[in-house]
Each structure stands twice: as structure tokens, then as C-alpha cells.
Length: 317
Ligand code: ASP
Image (cartoon, rainbow, N blue to C red; front, side, top):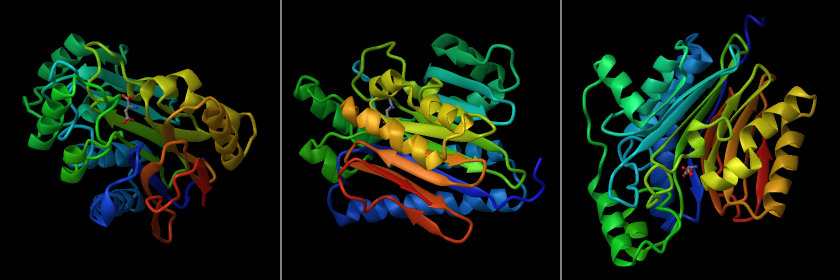
């Protein structure tokens, strides 16, 4: 195992249609940079990739701007149900919770399940675990998300997904998008980890299962790690995260693996995005949606994808 590797980090706050106005972009940039700075310092002080991923997911879940934890979108029946997953690349162990309610940080449950023999729990089981761990009850609903849902109910739930970020302007002009959060990290030991957390698509049927708590949306090995966002059904149909990771494991560069996988997603008219890292420290992102809200730290500086064009795009550094 490497003893000293330059840590790398990439995070996302969802993918979808363009944000309204400069104000929206700057607000999201500030939120993402704050998380990148704090989580990168965890990696620099010797924290493991999974510790950094959990910390980043908690911070993004706590930011009401993003569709995960506080600020999660509402499902068709007006309830918030959240899903989250964590995958450690070195143990190649996936854990997650599906459709959990009344908890502040779903990623904490995914973390607790890493060492369990039953590693993915849904609604009742996840709620029972939260009780066992004595996690306090918490209501993640925000006024803006409720307003968005009430407006959608008036329109008879025509939209396929909720707003990418909770932005006043977006809610009032009915612009569709998506949101979810994800963190991918490489630590100073050369280990990778990926975490993803979501409130779902918004306005979905009760019992619908998000890609975020499936390997399709969140996957890591010792070679590469990926977190996805976008329409969950599209991500599942492409099996996007393992598709990229396995290609890297088979010898493709991360950039080529992302390019090929996104070309395929584009051909198949999918609406999605992903962030990725490989064990060599290559940072990559890709999207077929108009925007991908991602930011990264490459060891020297922070960068982001907020000003990229609305075309299908794959980036690497
Ligand atoms: N992928 C998530 C889902 O379909 C939504 C998102 O990424 O915004 O549940």
C-alpha cells in the first residue's frame, strides 16, 4: 500500500437544468467550496477516504439548498423519504438505507451498516436501526420544498422531477431539474471511497427505490470510485457507476472509461451526471444533463463545473 499519496476530492450537489441567474450559481458555488475546503482538510490531516466522504455527505445533507437530508424533496404523498449509500473501495463493501424518514443524516446509517452482516436496509428496518442507535428524530422538511410540492399538486404533478436546488426563483417559475449529493475521495494511503445521499426525484410513487442506494448510483473498488446523480431510472438502466469502475479495473484510463460510458448514456438519451476518482488521483466528471453541480480539490486548488456549457460533457484533471 502507498504510504503517502496526494489526497483528492470531488463532490456534487446534483445535475439537471440550468440554474436561474448568477445569484443561484454563486450561492451553490459558495456552498460547495465550503464543503470542499473542510473535507479536504480532513484528508490532509490523515483522515480515511470513508471518513472524508461521510463528513462531506453530512455537510451537504445539512445544507437546505440540496436535495438530501434537510431540504429533501417531497414524494407524491407529501412525505420526505431519503436514501443514502457508502462504498469503501479497499474493503469493496457497499452499505445503504432506502426510504428512511425523520432523520437528519441518512449517511450516518449507511456508515453504521458498513460493519453489519445486513448491509442495505429499507424503511422499517432502517427506522429500527436509527432507534437502536438512538439517533434523535428530526424533520428534514423545509418551507421551500413544501411550497414546491404544493405548486406541483396544483399542476397535477406534471413535472418528472423536483428542482435541482431549493431556490426561490426556481420554485416560482416551475423550472424542472434534479438534486442529490455525492462525495468521492482518495486518501493519503491511496484508498478510495464514494458516498451518495438523496431525497429522491421528487413527486415519485411511494416505495420507489432510488439509484443512490444501489451500486448503480454509488460504487467503489481499489481502482476507482463513482457517485451519480440525475434520473435514477436512467442511472440504473446504464448501471453507470460500476460500468465506469469496472472499465478502469480492466485497464482503461478513468478519462476513457468516463468518455465511453457517457457517449453510451448520451446515445441512449439518458439524463444523468457523475463524479469519479481513480487510485492514481485522476479526477473526472461527466454529464448528459444541462448542468452538473460539482466542485473538486486537486491538491493545489479548488475548481468546479458550474460554468460548463449545456452540452454532453466529460472533464478530467
Ligand atoms: N438519482 C436520484 C434519484 O433518482 C435523484 C438525483 O440524483 O437528483 O433518486
